[in-house]
Amino acid sequence: SIAKYSMSSPSWGIKNDSVFRCDSLSNGFHRVKYSVTDTNNCLHDTTISLEIKQIPAVALNLSKSSACKNSSVFNLSGQTPTGGYFVGVGVTDSTTGAYNPDSAFYKKDTITYVFAATNGCVSMASDVFTIDTIPIVSFVYSDTLCDGYAIYTMKGLPFPSKFPADSGIYSGLPGAISGNKFDPTKATAGSKNKIIYRYVDQKGCSDTMSTI
Image (cartoon, rainbow, N blue to C red; front, side, top):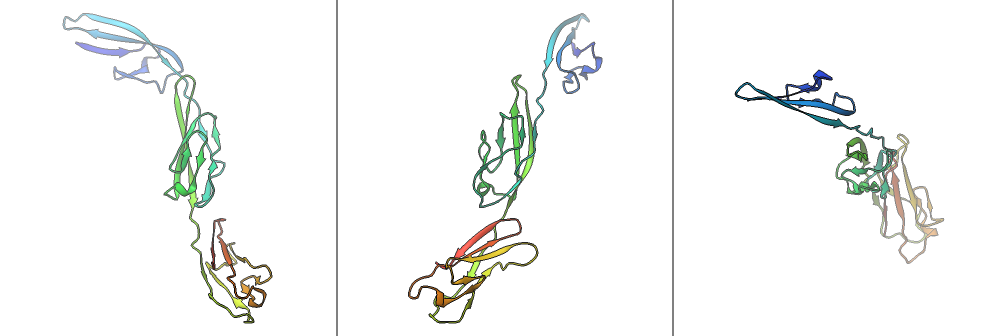
């Protein structure tokens, strides 16, 4: 026997006698004829109605497209329409879009937003989120300085340059620190004095290290 599907309007709605070209047809109901020619050369047919539903238009343009790896958890945004869910390595809550940069293993994380319309059709869109690495900070210092010593130059790494814009800031002892200079005469003698070095790179990512 020989079996095939066909459509009269439009005639190209069925491809190769069996493929329903739903991607090219308009939304709504379409009549499809199913025909069988048996071994006696007798023709049998029936007609069915198939509905093509509207696929929802979905877009994702992340409002925040990058963050430092040690940044706090935040909610992804930039999706239309609302009411869908997010998928990604760093996504910790698919419904709210909560994202933890520290849980993403890659520098580039493809975020996919999935939305299901009330008619049951599902569509999705993707955007790329960038996780910026944090700088590796080290601090070379002397464990012990005598009261009355000359001003000591502290050496934190990476060392800030004038271009591109980054910064290295020392803190911890008000009055005893000026820039990268430490004045032992203004520190507390006989106790451990905590000095903190904080480096911020050109992307705004930072890390700190302290003497204690």
